[in-house]
Image (cartoon, rainbow, N blue to C red; front, side, top):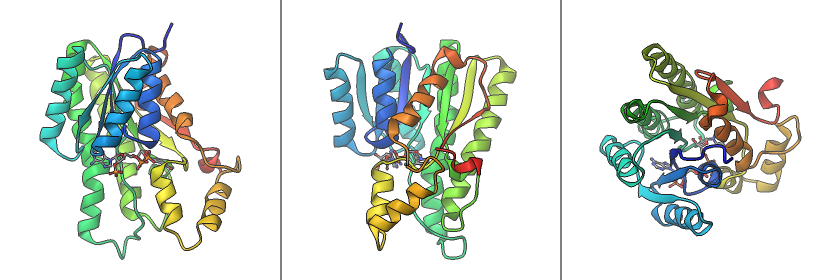
Length: 256
Ligand code: NAP
């Protein structure tokens, strides 16, 4: 029996990286998937490939920091598939900047996507899920939502915010007995276009890759499917007692 058979999932930032892996795995395990992203061509390709593999998917162009765009995404999911059971708030950006040298403009740009985007997703998914009789919201935080790094002030703030926003929303939904669960996921470094861009833009990419690998006690970075399997668990009814929890998948990074 597929693990999320008959469910409808929205995956933001599904055009590549972790979001793509989540969309592909949820679809392979029986969900109809709404892939959303601001990268239209890449997003369409992901949805088309899922459909070509015999599963259900569609693409919707989406800027997660735009409130009206969220209303359209939820409406598109309801129109195409009739309900929303799963929301993976995955879209995110990251760049370097310590607290002293980050401009207010850069701070706001990052928070608009990584934190406002997750807030809006939760806000608009709850009414749709309430109607469906429950659901699972999975918010992509990071190891950087658990521990500080002096080089990434805004990213740390956004991912720490996602962690506690998830708990607040989880308690709100639990108290209402909506059947809606909210959890956060905390990946270590995962080899995706985001991380590859960071490595390639460094002064010595080969050295940077080794440094990042060595940060993980297991000796290597993760792959998108390592995270997608955790998301699948939280999306499925297997995790029906899990809410307000933090799923750390980091090769031991934060165990030290
Ligand atoms: P990625 O490879 O850059 O993929 C993210 C996707 O989200 C891209 O298609 C990106 O488009 C899209 N996106 C960015 N801003 C958006 C917006 N405003 N609206 C809609 N889509 C948007 O990133 P990833 O590494 O897979 O990361 C996915 C999530 O996991 C992020 O929240 C990230 O912070 C988190 N995370 C990643 C790692 C890691 O090591 N990779 C570790 C911990 C947590 P653009 O290419 O145009 O930006």
